[in-house]
Length: 76
Image (cartoon, rainbow, N blue to C red; front, side):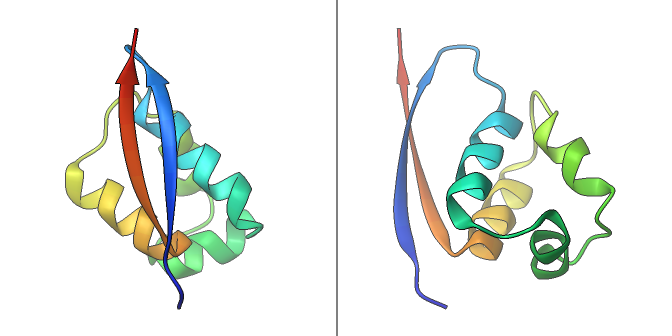
């Protein structure tokens, strides 16, 4: 799988789930495809998207499943 870098300018207070959702939208995958790559059941995906905070490990797994490297820049 080819990896691309997705740069996200995130205002302070942005939920990590929102960052994952943005990368997922750009990926063109369905939620089912994303869930399969992530190794979870599809109903877990909206929970991840709604998360204010997630573990670094889950964030990294999501990026790998989406085939991207997510670079986050916090902005005021």
